[in-house]
Image 1: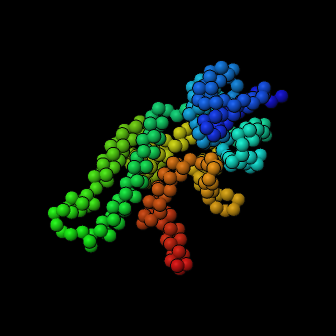
Image 2: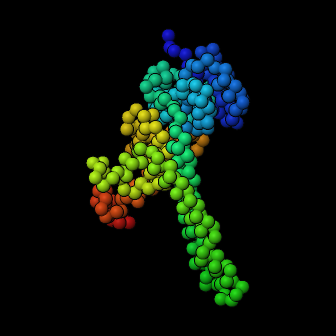
Image 3: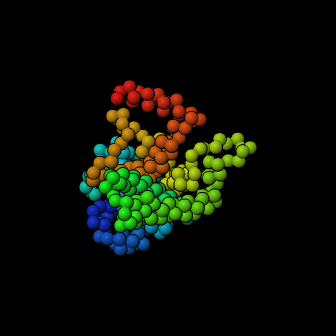
Length: 297
């Protein structure tokens, strides 16, 4: 006889479908979910990885429950159930997957307070940088188009000054610097940070390009690496796996992605920064690829 489990699947309008050995039930709103968590008898809870249920799974752990989650691509491979299926189909698929291959589920755990803080601060830090770069390009493009028609008179001095040194850009840079400082204070408390940045006499290699923002993002988004049974599971979580078509997976409208877009962003920013460096081992591959692109165009 299979051990008892409960499947908790988020649906639209902040509802959850609960599937247990006694049947199914729709929990309407956060209060009913929290009430059920308080009254449940400690059986393991199953759910999908990613999506809107994250906070409730965290609450379940705080209530002393065991939570196991499965990535969407693993669920689809095992059962054919996709993220676009109905909540009941998803719940039944998760239960079926658990009965077939419980080893594909991740034991969900709480990160430390410092790691959680690093995760949130790096998300904000990189978001601000992304918007700031975009706004900088827009300001420059607008000023380039306006400059030929702006008179030199005093009436437009303020406008010229604003485009030359936008307060919004300076404010963003100040916020980035403050966040960078706070992130550095947090990551320096973590052992893994010192493994990434060993002393000169250490046998460990130094990983270049992973400062507080990108290095902190990797640490914060991965959390406890023991949640990943094998390297390929971590690659999939970072969207660095390849589909059966030989392509990186793409997000589809209406579906919950099985990867962490923040982790993928940090890896993308790091790799695009590292590849063109003259002293990097990937430089030869980068030059080869660029040469092929030039020939094609």
